[in-house]
Image (cartoon, rainbow, N blue to C red; front, side):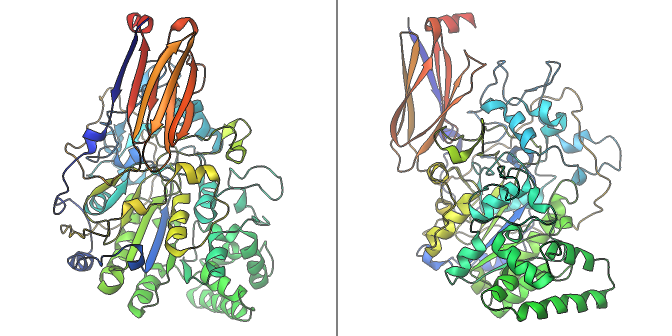
Length: 601
């Protein structure tokens, strides 16, 4: 019996000479920021960084936004997996056995009132997320989410987002932390994990934290950690936060909240939402009363309130950021929490509304070049909503029991966009190291010397700390694009459906300069005695995640391995027949096929 094998790598797809600048896009950067970028970034390293701003928006997948962007792992991905039925992963099966490919949102609109900006949300529950991933085979999307899941935007729809990617650095292997809804993913983002619900003892994989009277999670969140380390930090938020500041749902902050608002039930969400329905003068008076109560608290409770819980009037979010930038009081670490209207959530916001929010933040930074030259903005999304992504996420080994919920893996979740905007990420790069929401906390650990104890050992193994996104040695200057269009009306909402036979969408031609990845993966296999022994190797400095797909046994689950050095995987091959694909950490692919399987088809 002879072994048939081949390897396919995407390295050539990404490899490019580093150009001296970036191409002119149809983007939307502020003039002040473009002027500030004309000055080189200070060399040196992380020590030159003074300010980090995190903005986590809502519910968009990577393919949904950037499947057509040139030079990333999108719709032209040469390392894309095939499904159990033999089709490409981009041909998702329906219950009837037909297949649906990605389709453009604009092409799916059938009436004038179907604004492409205003598509609606899909199922994004724990159950739906697991069903779409289908045990790792990634072929349950339409059955779990409907055909709307395959809708995507392109450059014409998202000029601002594409301008940021063309000007700075986009990550195309950034995954949300769990295949589920907002609150669990924001728990990971703000604390490093999502533990157990205090009232039920069940794993916190839903949005239970939003329930009135929820007593709060009892492990430390980043607000407590930064406060204890003496690091200046703040959450910028308005009266409407769309319940996106998960710091509010931790027990230490619940205690402060109860002292200010009178009880856990009365907390900030209920109070500040009520202010929105009051006349302006009355709302301001009541808000001032709450501030006065908080000033009477002992330290550190007073600081925890004003840094993590206090909200200001609707429309003041970016004014506060701009004022602090001008005054030189921008905190070391800032979290920006958008209102529902600007959150980018498919059910209540739009890409254009979010673009205007980000534009205002970048304008404030550009107006203060000395602040900009020491600042990094991380722009990402909490989860993918129900929108399709073709790259199956890494999964933990069974022995990592804290990463499993019964028989289901806690993570990672699906790919979501991450763009890093800073003087040290200029150049239109793609960064393909594996990251998830805990990577933001790991970045703070590396930069500030703090410790986030709740991050699991497996997450530290599989995901990087985002430092590889930066180049502190070679500052660059970008091109000048115009500002985004004004936000339009945000209703009515509609769900796009596949318009019929349309063919596979094209990805923009060309290549993109890439950041180095810390992996050097390879795979070899030998068959003997009904077993295919696959040797996975990685001579890079960081662990590489491999997924082994046994296509000859489609009722079994794919196998996963985190490899630093080498590891052997035994794949059962009854009768010496096998059809096995191995996928590496950045799209590398190896295929091992027995002669009998090759002859069969």
